[in-house]
Image (cartoon, rainbow, N blue to C red):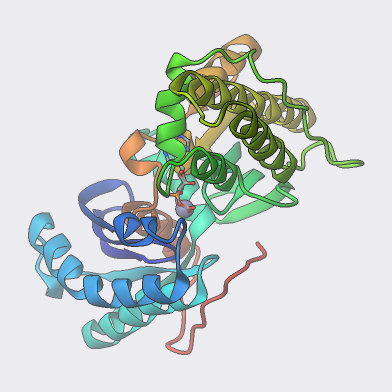
Length: 336
Ligand code: KG4
Ligand code: ZN
């Protein structure tokens, strides 16, 4: 079965062709990061327009690279939620038109479920049930995945997503959007004990996250250094990045450990753009080896937004009979 996947929920336009659920034949991604960098973050209206301009040729390229004739595509899977509404509508409506033209089913895919499905690509034996952690620019969620299409949210962020906290911290240090990867580079050279950042807690909810306090603390710290010394040196940046990363890691580890204790899961899948971070990957590897939990993290190329993960999840949604009508809407938020 050949599924053509489409992703356009934020600032990456992507089209992919996947065979029989887990074999990625092509996965073309066009990032708009450079366009949004000058505004310091994603501008929704500009994102929608850039998706519109990119999607047709990406679709042609994804088909060409896969070697699959368009007439042999058996279904079209498109992200319908959550994300920027205008951006989602571009990919979803393109998917609708394609499905209609080819007379094949349209499969609506949840973006968070897609991030988790990225772990299936290189781990052919991985199957639910398992515990999942999705860490991206828009989401920070711990989920119980009881089946391929059955998800229960156990914990989530009450304010900023973890990736957003990375990006805002990076921005405060003068790095362009999205600054997560820059923070990782700086953190490699910094002292993680140098800046004291209080651990955030969500009263009465041990699996929920809060990152806005950490981000504000770091921004205030940066302002105080700039007032005192005039400039932020490279050493300051490295130390702030390392201390911020350490705080984010401890916040993640504490909750994942607790979620493992509560659910008794022996398998953990961690996904999303922030999982490209080597420090967080290493901390999760250590935790899982201590707890004797099997850990799956997608290859870095499948951590960020991509359409292969949407086509993979689309395969399981299709098997569960989750087909959309041509009146399918897109949603900025979601509920499993
Ligand atoms: O999953 P994703 O591509 O898009 C969303 O669904 O949001 O995640 C993007 C996020 C951005 O916040 C970006 O800064 C962050 O992932 N990110 C990183 C790293 N690479 C990307 N954060 C920390 N360290 C990295 N190496
Ligand atoms: Zn994402």
